[in-house]
Length: 135
Image (cartoon, rainbow, N blue to C red):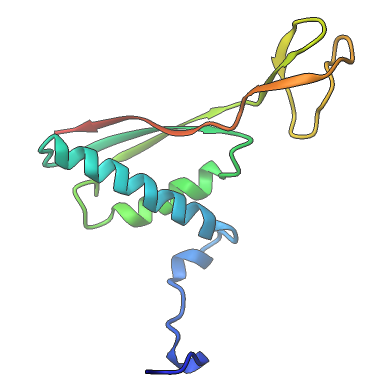
């Protein structure tokens, strides 16, 4: 059994450092997304994946640009090699418990902009595959 030394570790692929300092999280998200896409393509006997549509909320913790970068790196050499990735970015929304208003909110807004009442988050944490186009 080899001991865990710096000499025995493989370096991370260069894509982690190619202009995106926080791509490791998005890489794992992209890998999971691609597994889902490939599984669904296989279930439908697809020969080619042409498009993947995602929904990403701005409070999901996922950077759309980094996710797209990782998708491009992972699709090479697969049936999704020429696939287009379309990302719909969804703004955070909330509902006021007092006045009943619905509105967009920022990451650290906790009160209604109209009446100052407490808010209930209603959107912005989305992270899903909306659709996959196959041939």
